[in-house]
Amino acid sequence: DQLKMLAESVGVMLSGDPQERDAVSLAQKGIETLEKAGAQIKIIDTAGRHKDENSLMEEVKVLYRELKPNSVFLVVDATQGSAVARQARAFREAVPYGYVVVSKMDGSAKGGGALSAVAASNARVLFIGVGEKIDDLEPFVPRKFVARLLGMPDLDAILQRFAEFSKYEKERAKAIATGKITLLDLKEQLESIKKLGPLSKIAEMMGLQVKVTGEEEMSVDRWINIMNSMTMEELLNPDIIDSSRIRRIARGSGVTPRDVRQLLYAYKNMKKMVKQLSRSRRVGLPPFS
Image 1 (tube, helix red, strand yellow):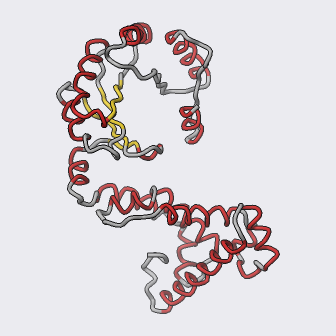
Image 2: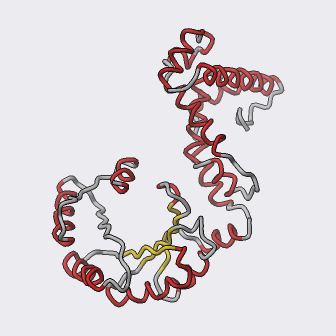
Image 3: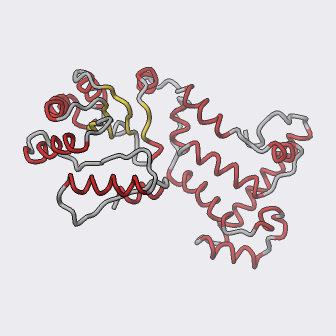
């Protein structure tokens, strides 16, 4: 169920049958289904197994022999530390994997030991998992990893994320620079920030020792949710939002009228700030920098 939810969240096709007990048959049927659907890349996700589970290790050998995959990935748990070495060697004897994914790197002090153990297997660490979301699966770059351990900012990641963030529509950017800002502009900017990742992760990439609370993360989500319950007319002309509209928006977004008023109050303050910036001719600055 978790795999299904993850696949659906990113629009990836998933083929599986909970009733099928034969791993090879299940994989072959899945490949056939995905090929008919036009999938170019197919990933077979096998059940987790321990090196001492002989029947499951034998199953991996059969899968490899029958499916003849282009690449094989071994996923290991960082919390196992240097004990990962034994697991890596056992799997190497069963299947010639070439790549490794190390999960749970965010919550384990044993991550370095796990990486060292994997390196001893001569396999390449391709990704590390630093959280539970799709965006938390990161390409493993040794230099960046060491920088993170030392509390240094990950400048490459910052530039990459903000390059995506800075793709504003030119006309809208000009309008904002002149002090004309709507709730639609605010909504799209908040959504762009969310695409960068959690606020706590952005702070981490910048090397900031700032603790972003769960409530602060939720506030951004709450505001976006509130604005999603507004009509386009309300987003473009917030002045028309009266008490009855506030109650309707609150019901539609599952919040209280007070939450909606807080958003409108914050929007008015931001609008004042943008106008002040435009008057001082600082049009080169992003409105919420």
